[in-house]
Image 1: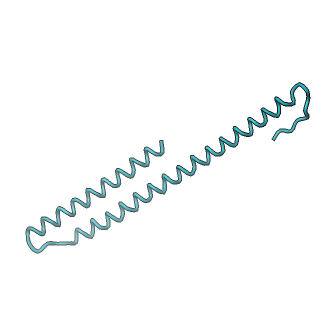
Image 2: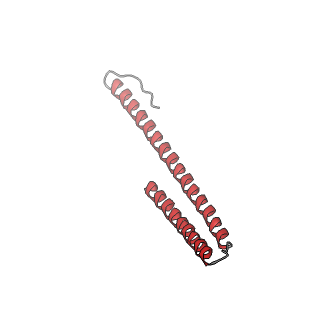
Image 3: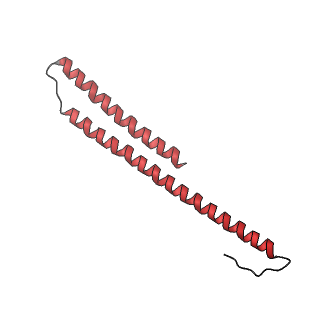
Length: 104
């Protein structure tokens, strides 16, 4: 903070300039803090997406152990395995694309 002796010529101008500089610094600090908190929130969101994808991958591998008793159930199990694998890929790509959009 600048402290100046008041002169008739420059007293008010120096005080106003100092006040304007302090206001600008405070606004810049708030904006930097806002960007940091937004970045951290985006990273937490990305981690949540990845955690969901890992849980889904675990489920896909659990489905690979399931076998049907006849051809109809074999086909049904295969369709559900492929559906779950597709869901995992779509979730991973969606989460990553949202993270990249928010990072920009």
